[in-house]
Length: 334
Image 1 (cartoon, rainbow, N blue to C red):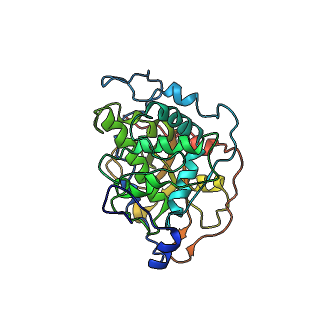
Image 2 (image 1 turned 90 degrees about the vertical axis):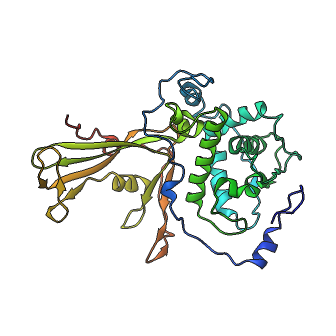
Image 3 (image 1 turned 45 degrees about the vertical axis):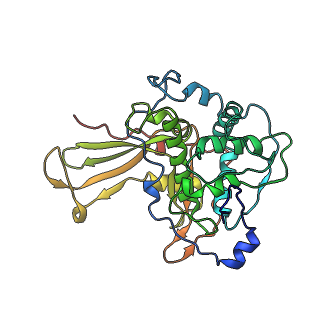
C-alpha cells in the first residue's frame, strides 16, 4: 500500500495476508508481453557502438564474454515476501544468477550510481512514479544482491512499488503469474533501453537491446507439402520457450523433443499449398533457428483439468540441444 506523501511504505506480508485472501490469477495474454521487438535478423556479429546511428545497442562480443561468471560467487541473499510476491521473487532470483545478464548490469550500476541511488545501503526504495527506469532499477538491485557485504535477506521494494510501471494489470498484494511477470519485465527493460537511446521498435537495431542480446533467439516454423514438396517457412523471435510437461513427459529433453516434434496434417486439416495451389497432406514442424546466449524455459505446470502438475521434471547440469532440436528443416522453395 502506498502512502500519500513522498515516503513509500509497504505493509508487511502478514498484514497483507490478513487483509486479502490469496487470489491466483492466471496469465491473460502472456504471448503479447515481452515480444514487442520486430522480426529483423539477429544482431550477432554486429559491431558495438552507443550512438543513435550505431549498428547495435549492446555489443554481442561483450555478452559472449559474460556468459560464464568472471569469478566464483557465493550464494546471495534471499528475498523477503512483501505480500504475495513469491512469483516476483522467483523470477528475480533466476535473473540474479543469469551470468551475462547480471554481470552486465552490475557494471552498468556503477555508471548509473549518480541517478536514482537508493537511500539505504541494503534496502531498495522507489517512488512508484513515471520516472521509474526498469533497467536502472534492475542494475541497482543486482549490484546490491552481488555486493560482498550483502545481507542475508533483501527487500526488492523498488521493483514491487513500481509494479504497475512494469505490468499495468498487476496489483501489489495479489498473487500473479510468474511467467507473465517475466515477460512484462523483459518488455519493460527492452522499452527502457530503446527510450534511453531515443529509438523505437521500428529501429533496425531494436533487437540489440540487453534483453534480446542475452535472451533473444529465433524459431523457424515450416510446413512442407506432401505432393509437390513445396516448403513455407517463417522465422520469428522469442525470449523464452513454453514447454508442455504433461502426457508422460518427465524431463527437459523430452519436453524439447515434444516442442519440436513434426506434426502431420491429414485430410481432416489439409493444408492449402502455395506451390501447387491444392489442399494436401503436409508435415508441420518447429525448430530453434538461432540459439540465445541464455535459453529461458517455461514449464507449463498448470493443467485445466488436473490443476497444478507437481511431478518431478528431470534436468541435467548441462543441456545438450541435439540434432532433433537444431536439425536443419526443409529449405523454403523460391
